Length: 341
Length: 260
Image (cartoon, rainbow over all chains, first blue to last red; front, top):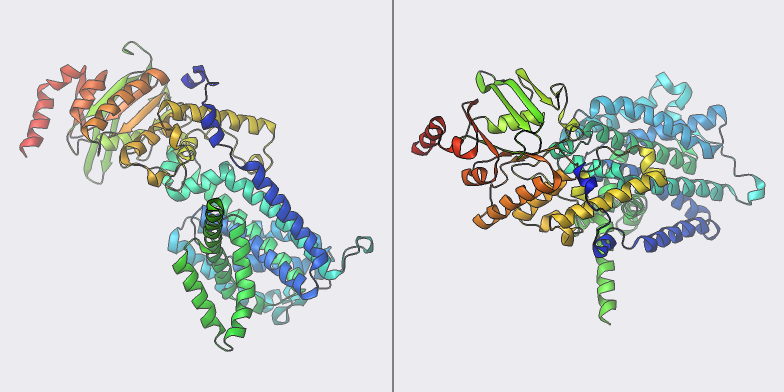
């Protein structure tokens, strides 16, 4: 009240500048990256397109999980379950109802969000390691539920479901792999935009405040429970959409594709990628969990997981902020040396 | 100064029991608009309990608290900002990973549209609202001599600066009552002197009432318009600083503590 009486126009121009520096340049960078992703449709072929689609699907899931774990500081070891719900949601949509594949992530997202809300309500009473273990319970239960005879009429039981996916209409000139890739890129761009806007908006403030100091957050008027629930539901939405897209990319779902290790992989993608790096972290982390296991198999046949584990340990030892943290460090070094020249 | 002003906050017969211990024993007090009220008392007198009850972190066993005539008993701590009650924390509770600016901004967000859609689409109305908020906060930072470090992280700041940031964060909400929990704790003599000026400056410029819960008697006596003394969960004195200072029960409470 009293504040409004004060002269609000008197803001030192120098201090005003501080609050909006570097924005146009960043926008240009994002636009360029988005264009590059779309342009890659014509450059990549067959297996490369499939790999890229896989990475981007996992990156969508990791972006959501990064909001939960990075920005809001809640640990989940069970988001593979929501990835599975999304994948099976999409599979059933295609198998039973012949839904166009590009629309399945929307349906899967809605179904996943419903499940996330139901599970989140009681689960969010828990914190830290307790929430981690409770969500891990979900991850352990998932393959068994998918395999069970109870739902096998829908899920295909142990056999799983093969998905018959139609490419985009002929006038687009896209083959099947390209159609899938374009759809994945589209969803990725939507999620990238939404995630950025949220973490930089008031919701992001609420998430960080709740993580940093819940008592102070409440004193500032933040609804801590709402902030946690939103972070959880958003992460579940992202994981189910990621799962749906990954099922589309693989054109097949089966219980064995969703072991509890998938949840650990998503966790790994978020942490190795870099907590609180909204876009670059999840992208690098997703590339890590998709590509590195194949790479390590070449380095040491039979011992690939040992190499994979060693990679994780080394990354965490060098830079707790993960690959995104390393990238930022390298970039700072490069600009520093180029400025010296 | 503010003596004959309107009643802002009223505590009526507040009692809190923790198990068998009576932390507050039917205490009553009033805070008027624009006044600086000092709350003193030896350790264990119930000052912090009262403070936490006013910010709704504790719930009373009996009694009522009213702000501008309306009971806040059913409300939670997240509702206090909207009722015009701001606070600082004894051990500083800033958001460690946010910048100075962002910390202060958290104090101003409570009335704003924080919907998912508002963040994602942010139409011109929301952009304008948030831009105005930014300007207001920059102005506040300048007043409290924090503008130069607006983009810095909290981790780099010393204790005294952190206290100022907490002040700014509480003031960003335009409170009508600012509650300060032992603001002089951990400050050196010179910094306490600055704090004294800061409290007065804040009251004068923001026209805000201040509840000052403090061990540092000199500070309280110098800066307060009125002082309430507590001991054993009860009010033992209420009056002008010099009256309370020489009140026999107050002397006894403090001398007794020093002798122990």
